[in-house]
Amino acid sequence: MKFDDFLFTYLGEMGKYQKIQFLLVCLPTIVVSMHALSWTFASVDTPYRCRLPSDLPEKEPYYTPLLNFTKCTNDADANVPISEYGQPGITCQYDRCKLPNNETCSEHIFDHSKVEYTAVQRWEITCDRSWIKATIQAAYYVGQMAGSMTFGVLGDRIGRKKVFFLAILIQITCAYLIAIAPYWWLYAIARAGTGFSHPGIFVIAVVIGMELVGPQYRKLASCITGLFFALGQVIVFLGIEAIYFTNYQILHIVIASPALLFLSYWWLVPESARWLVSQKRYKEADEVLQKAAKINGAVLPENWWEQLDDSSASTSKDGAVARKLTGADLFKTPELRKRTLVVFFLWPVISMVYYGMAMKANVLGGDIYINFIFAAFVEIPALFIVYLLIDRIGRRYILAGGLFIAGACLLINWLMGDNVQLWMAITQMAFTKGSITGVYAAIYTYSPELFPTVIRNTAMGFCSTIARVGAIAASYISMWIAEQFGKVFMIIPFGIMAVSAAILTLIFLPETMGKPLPESIEEIEEGSSYRSSHEMQPLSKTTEETTETA
Image (cartoon, rainbow, N blue to C red):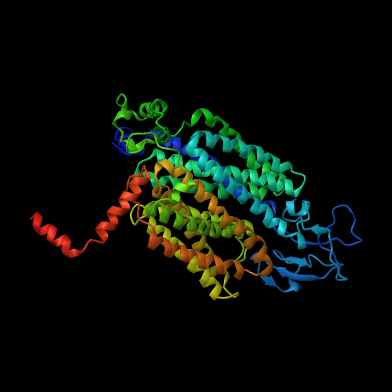
């Protein structure tokens, strides 16, 4: 008997125990979402001008009659005549980097009418130092990349629970350091630390969730985790914090503090029973499952592990204990190698488009706070759509369809030029963000189903690692290149890569809907050989066999 069959025969696919544990591992993703995009508002773009020789050292007002405006914008971030200065909702700006005598300035005066204090102001991340803004955001994803490589392997070697708790400790420590960091480079290092903890919390939460529930409910693991991520951005992060706490240091403290509650998880969240079984640690797995059975009102047979197939544990066909697998094993067999290469292309593309649109929410115009909230709200119905369809039309079509819609919307926006009406631009943004959100949820369901239990967490760790390449690229493209040279340098690469990823998904990846999780590499290769032999079998041969049978 496979472990899947045993587990869901006696405990059910989604009992009370699974629901409680799934909720517990999802809650920390709210804080993860706040840290992931907190730099967007710690460094929010506020008008600033050169400090004049006549300005006093104390805080000077932003507006001054000694300089001429270069442009004025309304609440929708659209240019309006300078003559409208002084009217409600109109913001006017000066030349940010040059004095009236055309000399470059090194100190600036910031507009504090909407934002109290930003990291940009503290460290003068202005003009020729604007690359620092993208670098700090990229540092988060560099840390996330390192965390993916570390926690992915550790999750398979020392267990899901220890990795999950260690990541929470690292996140809390670095989050408070961010709030008090005196230098931008120290801030960046601490931010890299919070990024390092990200996969240890988010990816492990998805893996734990998927290993708890049956095939019918695996879509919950990614969809509901993604829903908590979106709710963290809208309700907890933006809705309450970013709008009201406009001092970046206070904002960081408010974001970090809820995570202290998760220290209780050492006693509340047990180790993954599936992982314990894969390590042949049956007594420990029995303790976890007996507790689950008690909560679910079920009874487990004695020595139930004796009913399991050898493939569910870390054994080879001759009964010997199998060696520990590494990332290199992902490329040693043909079917697993093909899946790995395609999935390793999909993850950075999806990450690049998702985080790029989140970091540059006002790329199509409008207020950054309102646009960010709107873009995050779009994620919620997108996740429900994925939840409703992923077990009806399949993972592969959800993934390919969402990537194609996102890429097509971006390319259509570029073809329409700069004179796109605001309502049309926001509609395109909503479809792009909603589609890529659905894709992100789907790939968290789809990817673990493509890899066997013996190397699943390692594979997911590498997926998350390679995804950071896309997130790092998105940081520089959206926060630096697009601001300096125009949105076309963001839209075209995002659009082309998304459409390409959709095509590769349809051509090379199999459907996994409704199928049991593979336990060993042999299952994947044998399944591929079976499909290939039947797909390539001549019709005449099939007819002959049917006739002989009859």
